[in-house]
Image (cartoon, rainbow, N blue to C red):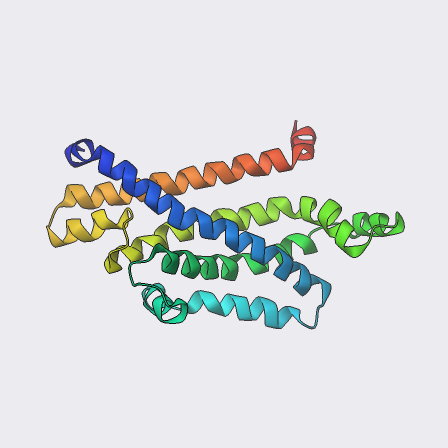
Length: 213
């Protein structure tokens, strides 16, 4: 507690850095996963390749991927872009299957009704399928958000500033207070992400409030 109080400005600064490194890839990964998931749902023969291939990306060790990024992107080892790209890959790996599951959960009667009304596949996807898939996608996004917050901490081993600094520095200095500060800060940040996603889900699915209300 004393460590946290004495280093509160630094905690806020590193929390902001951590949120950026975890949050931006969450948005980018979702933007990529939605069309990929739609393609997998639209073309069943391609689904195993798209879903399975994206899922394999998550098996790449995070530290190894962080180290490889500068070689692939031509950036410096301390460039935050390395972490953002790597975390976008991990987010994509988690969300493609979630998007497919969400689209598969849309009632067939609803899809048939939209098609009968003359909706094109793209229009139906944007106006019917995607909105109804939001609850499932949001659930997957919450998992991805927590995962991102955890994995970003590993980047501190390479000198990328984030909340993971308190874990590595505390370990090196045998400072349990600093270690607990890092752990609790990451937990709070993950909780904030989770609450924001739940709020976004409620705003995007007003009909659920009517049904449950």
